[in-house]
Length: 269
Length: 189
Image (tube, rainbow over all chains, first blue to last red; front, side, top):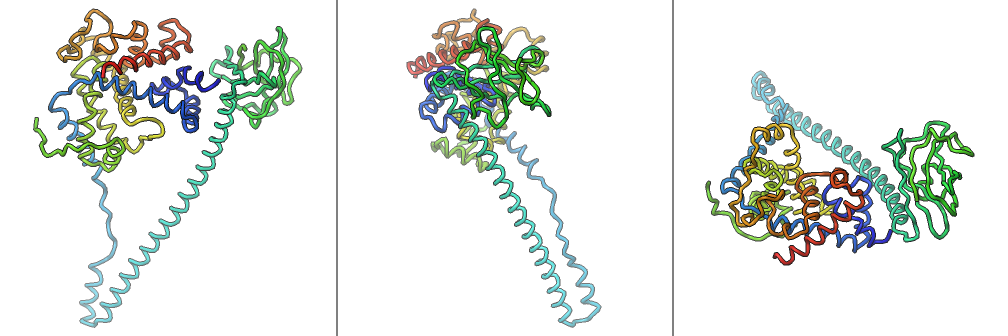
């Protein structure tokens, strides 16, 4: 699919109207970062609906503005009421002891010193706590960044697949028992290599593996075993001719004929 | 109905407005309201077709914009579009809510108002009450598509079922309808 076809598929409008699936949305957001033409089409579509809203504006009643502002302020007052933090420095106690001790000043100083010391300890504890929180946050952000980078990398691989004009995409849809399942076959028209995106299939159980089949002239031919690390990246097989593709769940290593009752998805080319 | 004369009528760019709103600045609210309330009011009115409900919903919409401005992400779309979508979603949710459905039963006639100049020329007998001239100049099938998807909250699958056309066709037709609309809006401005 090239850029023009991608734009005219209506995906941008779906996205703006909130209809795009998370996967479609993810791909579009990624494409927009790298493709000025798609980005421009996205801006344009938004602008059209904005212009429509502007052209069809209706003047609201006069008192609406003040109603809304007081509503907003009311909500904020509720939010601002927070519990008062109690300070735990015993101010009364030292004074009592001072009276008992008469006017010996050293006691006052030592009291003041110990209060200061307490405050400083509390301050340090607070600061250390803050610092370890910050460190934790940094560590958390680093792991988040890593997983985002990984997701981005995956997305880019998929995008390369999608934007390659030689790639034929075959949508595999869930059969009766697995109507929610879907997968996508990418079939290079030049090299005849077949790639599979099957991340949305449920995880294969222990000892089992998904097997891709090409149906050529009514006969199923194995088109390779699927593993997660091959997803959208490593060709599963070389298939010169096929009218349809299907995926079945087979024992580890695959079968010579598909187990029909374990078929998950299927799609015609 | 106090008129706030102290509001300084300065024009802010969209970016500046977002900054003001994030700071919870009152001037930001005035600017937001003065510039967008009419459009958002129009969108909601066309969805719920009742002035009374619109007035209720638009209050929620502004409170939502005010409270969730931190979540606005400019990389995912324009600010105006973001607000329109909040208005659309709130109004469509309202339309689909049970209490509203029940109330509708007691109110067989939509109390949609025709007294604004923009709406005065509409063809009252059509299903598209509330559209102004812009959309009326579109071909009927394009009007219907925009009406279903944009103002009635039909999903693309539902539209595909209702109009008995494949999902892919719904998507491309929707795009064509918006392209046509873009041209019409050009003439209109």
